[in-house]
Image 1 (cartoon, helix red, strand yellow):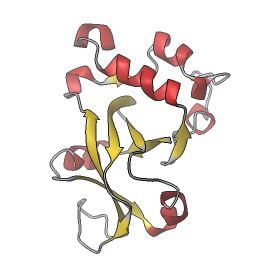
Image 2 (cartoon, one colour; image 1 turned 90 degrees about the vertical axis):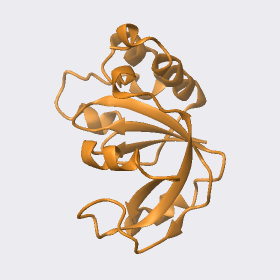
Image 3 (cartoon, helix red, strand yellow; image 1 turned 90 degrees about the horizontal axis):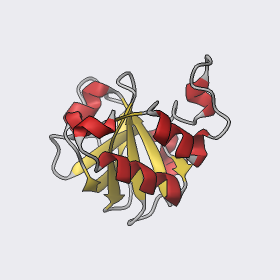
Length: 151
């Protein structure tokens, strides 16, 4: 299965320094995380910047830890470790509203990004929403493009 993970820019910057790469969530997503298996893929959407910023493979079942990973995020106690499939630098991030990609993704079919609330209709307001294999592959292909083609 493939999923999206929505993360803010500050936590994404911190995530990129962690070894192993580890996402942290509130305990309220434990039920969704129970569905995620080793080998599943996650596509990272950085909110506020509105970009696709990488694709990762889950490398370990989710677990709980009180270790503080993200500054000020004391409620983020559930962890998910991942390994990069593609982890581009920010020059190669892909803007979410890139027309060719937007129109190609099943997830965005019928979603008008010019209307208020589009982020909810596109299922990007929360993490761990399923994403089709075709959508994940399309995002990977765009992330692999040269920087001048990605935006």
